[in-house]
Amino acid sequence: MLRSKLMNLSAMLIFGTIAIFVRNIELTSKEIAVLRGVIGSIFLLGVMLFSKEKTSFSAIKKNLPILVLSGLGVGANWIFLFEAYKYTTVSIATLSYYCAPIFVTIMAPIILKEKISLIKFLCVCTAMVGMLCIVGTNKGSIGEGYNHFLGIIYGLTAAVGYASVILMNKFIKGLKGVETTVTQLVFASILLLPYVMITSGFDFSKMTGISWGYMIFLGIVHTGFAYALYFSSLKELKGQTIAVLSYIDPITAVLISALFLGEQLTMFQIIGGVLILGSTFISETQGKKE
Image (cartoon, rainbow, N blue to C red; front, side, top):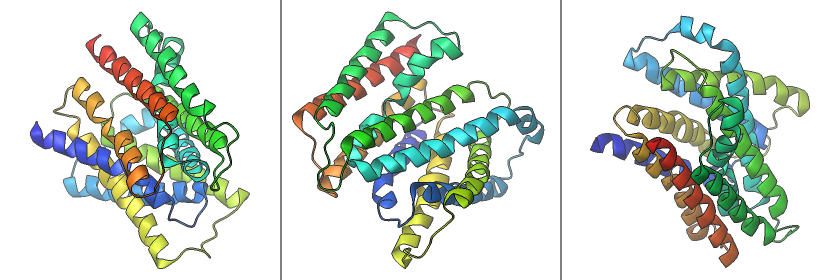
């Protein structure tokens, strides 16, 4: 149990540092998303081959339509999140993105026919108030190269993309977590590659050796290794433990934003962040109890 907790904790800490690497890669968000998917897929496929676990190709075939759609959702989610990092601070982008569980709560009654409890409804309302606290203090602000309002929109769009992937995964049957993730990464890469080639193509002219180092690290560590740690830890952990540990990700991102990037949150933004993370935490733990 302790080993699983440490693995999950390590994965969350890795996820929380992703913005530093993305900001130091001289590529567009969609180019980074494609390369991240390709490198991460290769790494995870290698892990699966090394572990000699059997892959259920028949289950993949049965779930093919939903895997393709969810793969597209994964790719879109990355693109919008990386764009958010470019237009606003890491803290604000992360807090916007962390509205994903709230979007799941909103969409679940429609897609999964689940009933929404009074507590979850209040959590959604609280998270919206928190988001207003963050948006209200940055609307139209374009200082220090930022356009916070646009960054928040990208962050929320990424959250919707991630929420859609979570909901689509509910319909996947007969596949392990790692198998699902690898397949989604592969499809995300395959679907995004022609899109990038048609719209802008790849421009590596500004990429330095350091940038390539960040890109490879992002693909191997932040994607392949972190996902492998995360899914390997789920077997022995309870749902509430996973929900609690998931908050290491945004907290790490906010701390790194302040300590290493010199980005500060206003009092209203801190209040907004507490409302979003607090309401999401209550909503998730309440869902596990139910």
